[in-house]
Length: 129
Image (cartoon, rainbow, N blue to C red; front, side, top):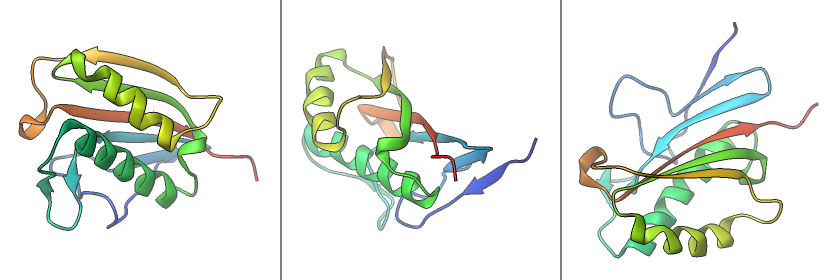
């Protein structure tokens, strides 16, 4: 299998043994993004809406580095430390996506890296050339 690493300075650098994304064929697997500011590598300090928005900005940057956009995302997995924040995800997501929306799962978790409240990963499918 051919794998191509996707990297952009417009999204937070990997803080472990993983890539921002990996492309195989027309499919791109985007690693989970948390509300880190890519310039400072610090967690965005603000309400949950600002943190969720930063996550989608980070996903946008990685999708674009792969040659796609959020419109190419087929599947999202949303991890929340508090599922009561799920309505915020829907509200913010509506600003970044148009119908047909990607398939999605929402998972409540006990904790996330750096103590953040949200992480989102995705599977993106690039258009045929």
